[in-house]
Every structure is written in structure tokens, then in C-alpha cells.
Length: 150
Image 1 (tube, rainbow, N blue to C red):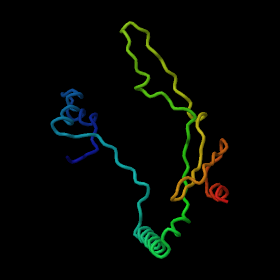
Image 2: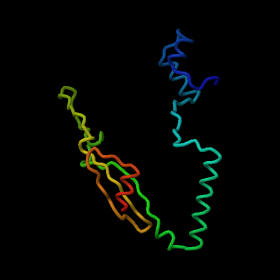
Image 3: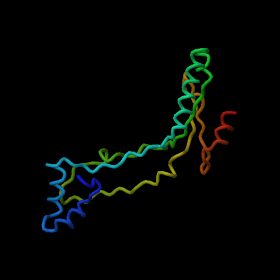
């Protein structure tokens, strides 16, 4: 309980007479410990950032209250995403019955980068306005967004 960052290897060095598998089983089953990763937050907002976001949200609500749907009809948003040219076979789909003496089926890893293309998608409250596919090797940045919108 003193250190939540312990490892089974560290426990094993403290208790060399106990098998590692037994240490792992003791930590997980009766003590109900699980090894979990910390969640990654996108940003640690300062008080000033929070005040700015609150101000922007209140401004948005005020404008929507004043102009209604006319205001929300003018909002366009966009995002970028990788689009794959094919749907890879899942692990479940590649499973098959085999006898213990049957040869093992092998599957090569796919090089997905060559089969994907970056695209930007722009939409408003009524739906998709534009899907733009980028030439290979080009990146999405503020200039690209501005040019696409123009």
C-alpha cells in the first residue's frame, strides 16, 4: 500500500523464497490489485485557460440566444483522419481449426502506411460539406485548412 508502482520483480527481490507466479497471484486475486496505466490528459489547463474557455462558451451561448439557428448555420468545423484503402483481416477472422500435426499458418504483417491516405473533413450542423484527400507526404496545418476552406 506504500508504493502503488511496485513490480513483481521488486517483490521477488524482497521475497526470494516465493515463486514469482505465486507473488503475482497473491497480489491480483486476494488483494484485488490490477496493473493499470495512467490516463493521458491532453492539456493541463491553467486557471486563465479555464476562464478563457468559459468566456468563449458564454459568448457562444449569448450569440445563439440572440441569433438562433442563423448563428449556428454559419459554424463550420473540420478534422483530419487516416482512411485505409482496405479492411484488414481481424484476428478472429483468421482463426481456423487445425490438427496438432497440421502445418502452422503464417500471416505477414501489412505495411499500412502505403495503403492509407490522409483526408480532411469539413461539416456544419446539417452534415458534411467537403472531404478533401491530401497528396501523399503532405501534412495538415493551419495553411492547408485555410486554403481548403477558401
